[in-house]
Image (tube, rainbow, N blue to C red; front, side, top):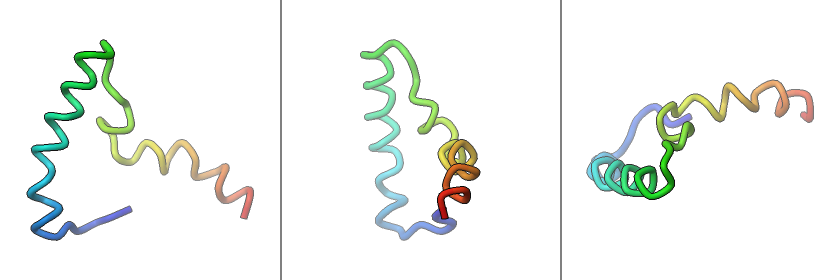
Length: 52
């Protein structure tokens, strides 16, 4: 997981939030992976460790 962002990456956050909101409005639901950035790691952590 990325713990620090560069200034260039931080500048993109509002742009991507607007993009995600537009997609959610079109689809009628929010993407849970965008709402909780730890979800993928928590959901697949046991699976990935079992494979390795």
